[in-house]
Length: 392
Length: 231
Ligand SMILES: Nc1ncnc2c1ncn2[C@@H]1O[C@H](COP(=O)(O)OP(=O)(O)O)[C@@H](O)[C@H]1O
Ligand SMILES: [Mg+2]
Image 1 (tube, rainbow over the protein chains, first blue to last red):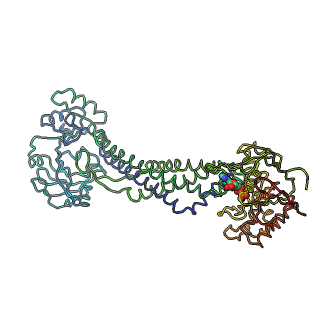
Image 2 (cartoon, protein in one colour):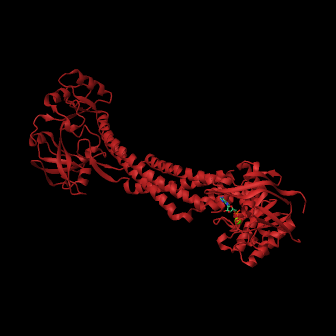
Image 3 (cartoon, chains in turn orange, purple):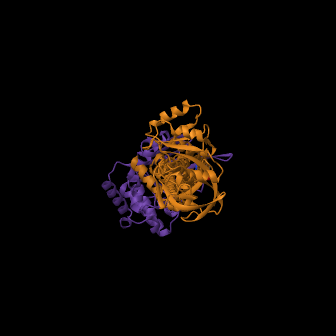
């Protein structure tokens, strides 16, 4: 039986060139489906990764209770003082905690690609602002000097927005600022930010004594429970305290879920179209091979090999489409840099990431299209009355 | 030529439904063909010649009646049993050769052997023998498109005899060939009958072709009229 199946499948596949254009149309349709799916999934994966790599589990972040994002949060000076006395924080020789109370504002910038205005985050950070984050490195220029109108900008922001080159003067809201440094942050979301000295930002934007978040370096991930207990136990605090990692995970899940929720239905709708195409191609394949199929049946071949041969043809066409779709998605989208609105309505710059797992999902979808598109025609091939088939 | 019938039809009826009309092709048809016979079947177009061959070859079923071929009541076999039965006992030759265009002559001839337990070397030997019988040993590696109609039909005959079936069923085997090629094919069938003892039933329109057979059956309005020929 295996010999029969192999022989018939081979004959079947060898006849594909006779149906070249129709077969190609199926390959292209399936390829497009996979490409669209993978563009969405790799976008979601890239976004998730950018935000996930932004968070550490030994850094705690405090926000106003119920504030999901930094922009919606307000913390008063008294609360900042209370947090500075909290247990579980890393302290220097003088007993000062490694922490940074911050102000997070939205300013305008011009996107290089579209020449349109978009929101940019300007962050006023404390002295320890860089120390409470992972992998901050000044790659050009220097850190801003405390008390000055100087800013440092993340390298993603520099790439995507106009006018932030080292040494340039930028106008942000009411004041002029000088770009004195460019920094990296391990590919995290901070690379899309502008940083300046907190007291200067507070006074220039009329937010004296107002803070939005407080970042604290913990003695270790375990210290978080101590800090949370301290916060919950003091009625003057009652803030929301979580690890930076959890904070970013919460932020990213919404957006990446949204991207995925858009991507799959679109891909499935397109897959239905490709499925109709595959069915049509395979029914014509069976029709054009009817004399061959019937001749083999007359010789003594069974119906099952005709079934398998047809199904394999369909799966092969779909698989070729899937692989080509994945290949094009990879060529076009992998590493493709994009920016989109983050949870705080500011721009987050991230790269599409086409992982082997996602490619697997794309090819699986292609094979499902091939399987369903080939099944009914394959049954027809197996059941075709021989006499009718011989008449062509 | 033995007297044992290789083919026996008893009370076979067969009709088709075409749209609203039901047409009867055979009504209680009886027929016996002894092993070793070479029968030409003639008759007007639409008289049921092909249908008769299809019934004998087990690719179509009678509405009622018995079809006994090579010792089996094939009207009673299941589809799977019929496939195996055809592989063992029947060789078909079609008007348009029905070769697989993407396979070489040798690969086409090998197809029926894929249904046997023969190993690769044995299969190659059988293919060579069959191609030698039809005088095409030198064309084993050629594709159908590289051969004339007559040559393609000879490949088809080699395919029909390669697994050594008792009964060859030929539906207008020379219907698409010129006189010279036709005579070559018919001479070959005659030799297969005479030298190898193959029983042959051949449908033809051509009285000249029918003269190669031992006898001719005229099929008209569902009945036979026999005309014996000197062998
Ligand atoms: N599958 C079929 N369905 C309906 N009618 C058929 C079918 N096969 C044959 N017929 C009809 O049966 C009659 C006999 O056909 P056939 O055996 O092919 O005749 P012949 O070979 O003598 O020309 C014709 O009228 C033909 O139209
Ligand atoms: Mg006919």
